[in-house]
Structure formats: structure tokens, C-alpha cells
Image (cartoon, rainbow, N blue to C red):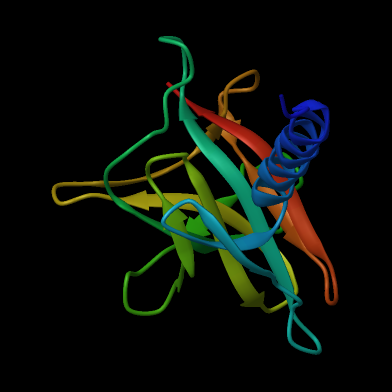
Length: 155
């Protein structure tokens, strides 16, 4: 009769490693078919943006459809004026990675500045709003840093 005690410990270790890997996946690694490739370091003078795009309600399923971009935020001279977002599919920053099965996304080597997340669909494009504020989700990118948005809920 052979002991399975060592095998159980190995299985627990593998599960623990996989669980910690899943967390890393959400905070700034490249993903290929759900598997981690490598952590991403921003190029000098740039930053990264990562997060997970989920549908609000219905158990938070990954939001699918459209292409993710970062649009530049433009501010008016008046402090009471809302920000505007400049977007064009030919000039805006496209997500370097998007895994629709998990909802994770990654923008790499983004110039420092203020951005908004834009979803471009066949018939329309829209800025992703903060659910609690009904205002654009504004993202500040800093050189040498990865901005982790966490879960971004879509209405």
C-alpha cells in the first residue's frame, strides 16, 4: 500500500500557486488564452493600465463586445465644466490585450496623462462611466507605474 500524503500536499501547493497566479492575472500581466505569459514592465517614460470589465448585475459576467481604447481627457478653462474625451479609432490607444472570457484588459506603454476608457462598437462608441457617479471613469497614468483599476462594472 502506497502513501498519498505527499501527493495531497503537492496538489494543495499547486492549487495555492494557481490561486495566487489568478490574482496576478488581474493586476497587470499579459494573458494568452487565460494563461499568464509574463508580468509587463512599462517602457521608460510610460505607464500601463489594467483591469477587469464586468457586466453589472447577473453575477458580474465578463463584458464582451466592442474594442477598448483610452481616449484623452480634455479639460475646459472653467472648473465647473465637465471633462471632454477625445477619441478616434485611428489615433486613440487600443488595448494591447483583452481576454473576453475573464474580462481582463491591459494597455501598455501609455504616455503619462489623463484618460477615459472608451468602448468602440459597430454602431456607436461610448465612455465608460463610474457607476456610483454617472460620470466618466478618469484614469491618470504615471510613468513607470501600472494603474490597476480593479473591477470596472458596465451598466
